[in-house]
Image 1: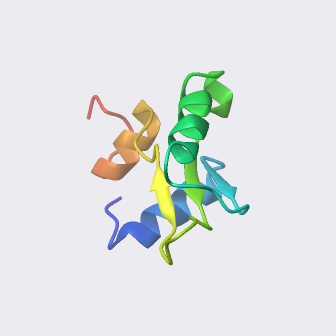
Image 2: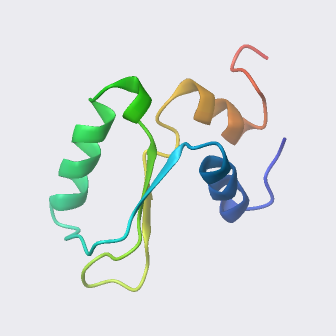
Amino acid sequence: MAYKNLRDFIKRLEKSGELHRISVPVDPHLEITEITDRISKGPLAQNKALWFEKVKGSDMPVLINALGGPRRMAWALGVDDLDE
């Protein structure tokens, strides 16, 4: 399945339980990377895409680790499995 835009892909991540929303304010200087590092190096079940909703000093949210696994990478490419 191809996605029209990033919002559609984010919806897929959320519906599949592959997105973790972080709603507390975070500092873009080192804090986002520290949180992402801990999540991505932790247990596989916790390795999710991260949506930082409130980034200090910015009106824009940050999506990170969206392609951080073979399943999410396949979805982004519009296939169910990377071997397709």
